[in-house]
Image (tube, rainbow, N blue to C red; front, side):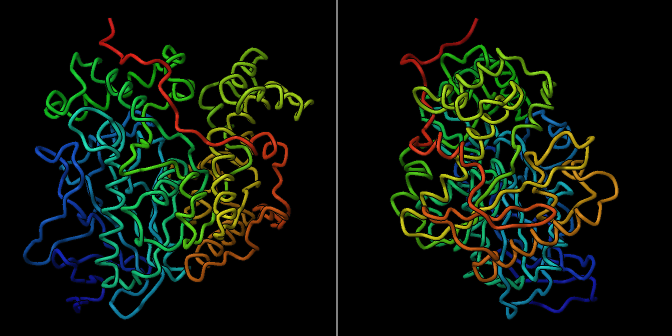
Amino acid sequence: MSVAASEPSEPVVRTTAGMLHGCRESGVAVFRGIPYAEPPVGALRFAAPRPVRGWDGVRAAVAYGPPPPQGGHFGMDALARDTVGDDWLTVNVWSPEPGPGAGLPVMVWIQGGAYVIGMSGLPEYDGGRLAREGGVVVVTFNYRVGIEGFGQFEGATANRGLLDQVAALEWVRDNIRAFGGDPGRVTVFGQSAGGGSVAALLAMPRAAGLFGRAVAQSAQGTFFSPELAADIATACAAELGLKPTVADLSTVDPVLLSAAGDAVGAEMARWADRWGQAAHKSIPFSPVVDGDTLPVTPWQALTDGAGRDIELLVGHTRHEQRLLTALAGLLGQVTQEQAAAALDAFAPGEGGARRYLDGFPAATPDELYELVQSDCLFRMPSLHLAEAQAAAGGRAHVYELTWPAPGMGGALGACHGLDVPLVFGNLDRGQPAMLIGEGPSPEAEELSARMRAAWTAFATHGDPGWPAYDAEQRLARLFDTRPTVTAYPEETSRRIWQDHTIPVLPLNGSSPMGVRK
């Protein structure tokens, strides 16, 4: 039930756990830092999330909750250490019309960060503009990442980060009506590891019925076997001289455990023969296809019809890898040897490297290096979600962002992460906004408005504004200065990958890793 606030600037709602008061910002009611599960510490560490206990009185919901322990990329570990408390599992809500009678569509965001970083309190994820201009309720939340969320070891519940996401969606189901949302019109949307999480939710029986629409932006295609995940966790524990068990790790300071994960991630290349693609891309954590929480890969689940009743919007940027190449200091400097190594590591199946060389005969080493990694990690996993959905009789809409980022000298093209500020409309804040450049241009504002309109239209009635994808026409929306609808443009890559199944990444070798010397 919605309760009248003591003053217009302080909206008050009643949730299943108790009363909350938020604030108003630019005409939108905002509630931050609402716990959706008990803090996953002490006896609950490395366990599935537990329902939050209720409280008496009116609880302030005006500040973001503390983020979960983070990896050290982009200074995220320092941001996490600067906050106090262990209420890692909280949600935030932006509503243009709080109250149980509004019945607005709900958009639940899952942030990315390679499953090692990510927090909902970053300025780029502020949902105010999307809620205000789109007429939707926007929800963001924290979930466990790194070892806390995805480490696979004895005594720990698998895929805790994914189970956190399910718990957040259950909170939405049970409470969002009080904030003006319709629990029957929930769309999950996420980018990179968040897009991979959206894909995983499509395959998870525990998530069934919690959302009716899904948006997977640049879905990260890495899914681990239990053996691979356990072997990497063993290496993380070995960094601290410990065994990979809850008994050994549950009392370790989360900061130290995150640092151990970083140390393993930084030297994964030395284990490339054993860990394969995960090592080549320095990805120490990903969802685990454990046969229970995640029975099969998302592509197999959609092929089997698991998402047939869920409307899907999926796509990617044109130059996914380019930002990652720049961060590695290799932009414009990739050698033929490095390109050949990338083709060997990431091209699909027997003869995949040769198919890239034949398909892109004029490509430079830089271009081959970018193409095969863009395809392997983001572009083809995203496209294959749409193709599996369509083949099973479901509906999917495909897009590609082709507008080149003007920031950082214009060298990054339509790179990974460019879609985030465009979809949220936060063009002048947060790290991804650097891609837009100082003082967003009218062109950027117009493109952002078109993308926001497509995303909110999809959340409202399931149609983003262009035809669904099918095996004959393969229509896709290209987001650029002049938007068009055309046949999916990355046809050469599509053909190279058309007979390749996105795999569960295996452990190469049968014996478990021991403590390293």
